[in-house]
Length: 422
Image (cartoon, rainbow, N blue to C red; front, side, top):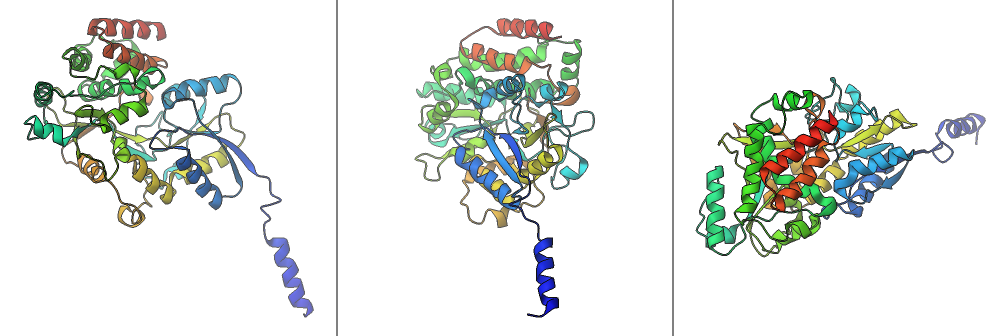
């Protein structure tokens, strides 16, 4: 071997970076696990990102319950264990106000089809708009509808009540709802949709006025929305087991055929087996005044801690995790989360999956022309965010609605909490 060749080999060895000797960046990453997104999903997604960026060592953290993610984060912060990165399945606005989250840079948002998503706070994005979820949909058992003589999907609130009445006369429970203990968010789902469709989606100033103390929960629009949920219970149209079911059991109750309709987010479509014994359809929850509105949520990706030792690296991990097309594909398949990634191609990237037809129906609903898209109540950010602590009050009072409490009592509870927080 000549001297020049040996020198070139030695030089190449010196110049090749050694990942084994480089300092590894260790990040704590909080995720949430559900029946649709179990540990396997998150482990695979993290592994994909780390494979492309081996400088990261990721410690996965899972809260005791998906609905308690915000409370668990507060506990961790109080004990100096706040994670570096966290999926934003909580009231992000509370943590922005507390100075616990870092904003993303404009360059971090270039891969997202809709970089604004749920909204900005002081012109900055604090949670990556990784996915779009259609929140205000109602799944239904087609066989039960047919047997009750319901030939069309309800288009108005009157149609919905008429369908419920027919189902009841046919000895079928019209609505499956619920959410026990830590799954109070599930009990609140119909109410959050009703408020978004009929209050905040109808009066864009309501949330600002609520936050500023100029209005409260006694507003007639809010009373109508709460009454609409309460009436389902008072008419006997909901399952008697509502407050004994956790989220997994709630979902399974509908899949078992114990009721005709299930108001829940579009992610439920990912839980329906292709060979399910009965056919399930889906339609948008109607607004009380008949105006075509749809509650959507474009956010849900990672947020980054303002306390992290590695802010730039944490932002890099968050972006790469959110825009990994294989993770996006698995997420769409498992949980019907529609990717907000410019790099994602539905036809090409889902070639290896057999998607449930419900997912395509939901995409069609999302793309329906003329629908006013409104943000999901209690998850708003910026000037439209609820005061810290109000989301939990909405959740717990939704359980009170299912227990049969009067609308006036619910409003009093919410107003009392509002005064306490102002």
